[in-house]
Length: 353
Image 1 (cartoon, helix red, strand yellow):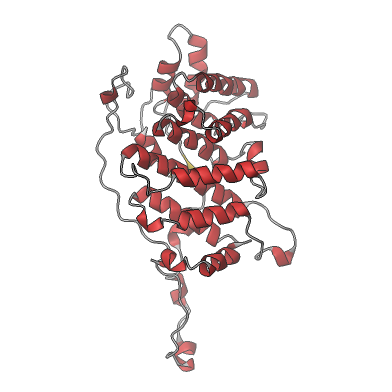
Image 2: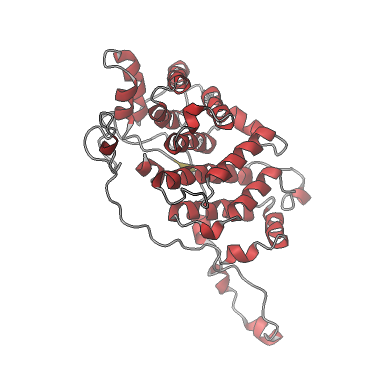
């Protein structure tokens, strides 16, 4: 599971091509053997060694400050305008799409663990999640969601079911109707209600955040998300608070690999929410285009990602926090107010560092 979480890629649109074929040929999962999940022995899940991640490039390092008082008017007039490009935020400008977990190499192993060999029809439908060129009919895709929901609700192979569900939410039927509303809504409810199927282990919870992150970042987010995006919606704010809590780098187990993976997944969800809030259509009034009030959701993510920012030691989690902040601080509709809030709270120095 760890390589899946670490290899989430930023894309401009949710891909329909989600990877290799049903046998998992191609790609790199970082697990040895044809069945990376083994036969129940925990030692069989051994990620291959990966090189250490490079240091995070701080996208805020070149935020311009006010001109020094000693600079004369003549010097100011002669100052070239070109350096503005050096003070841009190339990392933020480049990574403008959602974070999506699209590794399909594990489909075969997951299906094998969930569905008996004799149930060929059920297995064949799930195997299609690894086929990049498959055209989904609404009835067929709805059956996949229903099938995976039953595994999650029963507590049988929950992590494997969620691994498949994170791919299913990226698929759209030919009719164009979203079919992920019920399944992803169930994951939301189970997280908020702390159902043991999802919160009994950090690994399972990580996969739950993967599902929701993919759902929010897909081409057609579930209908419940647009409703939850309203700042007055208590459930949406609770979900944000839960993601911020799971992304907290100061917990007692913050150095464990399972906790790091949980933080990465939770912050990926926050990034996709930030991206959605920053790009959704706002007020039609011209005067409100760049001066929209900050919603409770925006303020919660903004302050939550700044809190304990410098205590995050994991490069992936830290980068994703920066990207959350970047989406909000550079938002056309409310970015100026977001920057003003950060300054008013005395948190701007932490961002600059």
